[in-house]
Image (cartoon, rainbow, N blue to C red):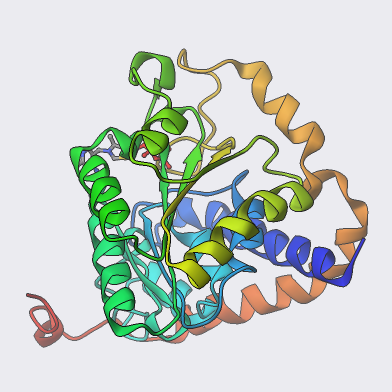
Length: 306
Ligand SMILES: Cc1ncc(C[n+]2csc(CCOP(=O)(O)OP(=O)(O)O)c2C)c(N)n1
């Protein structure tokens, strides 16, 4: 295993452990925000972000913890935001669903399904006009591709040849509705209809496969200003929103999680245990920072709000 593979696994484990801490804290109500956990979906996010530069910009959804941390977002500011504190990344106004960290390129996340397609497409258009060599990555679930804005953005980004990669995390569920009840199209055919290059990543736990599929499209977005669609088959371990499991409900097969967990490097690779103490210490420091921080004053309520 290469050093960079080890670093990616470590970074993915860090995201997993941050969310495990959120699960532990959640029943105490100190976290003042709904949470949509990425557990199961961390490794491909880290691998994709490793192909970006700091000035490349990322837009994502309410399921934002993995992208925020993988793009370099500050952990203290994230926990303070989840706690609703003044020191949070958005002074406690954003919560988990709207994390952002512009200085490292995480421009925004949105609870409105599909909204970030147009934000990302606009940002990529700006990059193209400025000729700054940066690219934009837009990370959403497959359910969001059912929104009309996705189709408009594909058309616009193909027409203007924007430096933009749409990454679609296909976890097979939108809340609790399975894919086969929702979509009449295949994403590949849709991308090809707009003459946009497409790659499918079948194994979201295999760093080599992810990098091999994504690198050419990301490089092409940068060097030749071309849009791309990357679809990743993945699995969300927890319920849509909240910290519990939903495998006891009817909408998914309870045996599937065992299949994913058996192959999950963050569970089966015991070498990663070497990183746990150091990550735990970092997380405890961030929680402590959040706990010691003040809540915003009442007169902050309408500041920075448009
Ligand atoms: C415009 C809009 N419609 C509906 C919703 C309610 N909603 C929230 S999440 C979600 C499912 C999205 O699924 P997907 O895009 O696959 O992402 P995942 O949650 O699986 O990451 C829906 C329908 C919303 N937030 N915004």
